[in-house]
Image 1 (tube, rainbow, N blue to C red):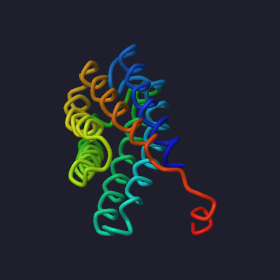
Image 2: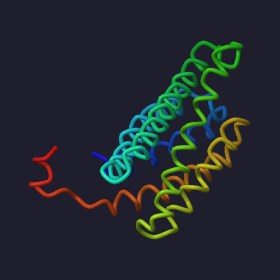
Image 3: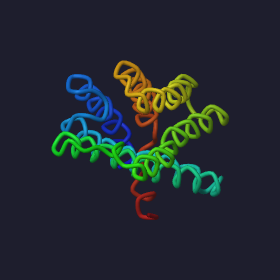
Length: 183
C-alpha cells in the first residue's frame, strides 16, 4: 500500500492546490478541501510505510518519523475539512483564537516529517540524491506557501513533493510471497 499511496497522495495534494488556485485560494475552496483530505490520508499511509523501512535498523528514527507524520497529516486533513466548512458556512478556523493556533503549531510537523525523510535518504545514500533534495525543498516551501496562502508557491511546493515521492515510491522493492507471510 506504500507505493500507491506515495504516488497518488502527492498528486492529490497538487490537485488540491490547483483547485484552490482556481477557486478562492489556499484554504478557501470546498473542492480543494475535499481533495486535500484524501491527499493527507494517502500521504499518511505512504510516509508511515517509508518510516517502516528503517524500523529494524533505526527504531527510534522510525518512531519519530511515524509520530511527526501522523500528527502532520491529521492536521493537514483538518485544514482540508476547515476549507470545506469555510465555503459552506463562511466561518473559518482563523475566526477562533484557540482553534487556529491549535492546528498551526502541530501542523508544522508535516513539513518537518518530510524534511526528516529527505535528510535520512540523503544521509544514508538511499537511491538518487535528487528526490531527497526535491523533498527537502518541498518541505521548506510547504509552510511558506500555506501559512500566508501563496497559491503559486503552494503549486511549486507540491510539484517538488510529487517529483520526489513518486520516484521514491517506484524504487521501493515489491515484497515476495515469503515476505508477505511474515507480515
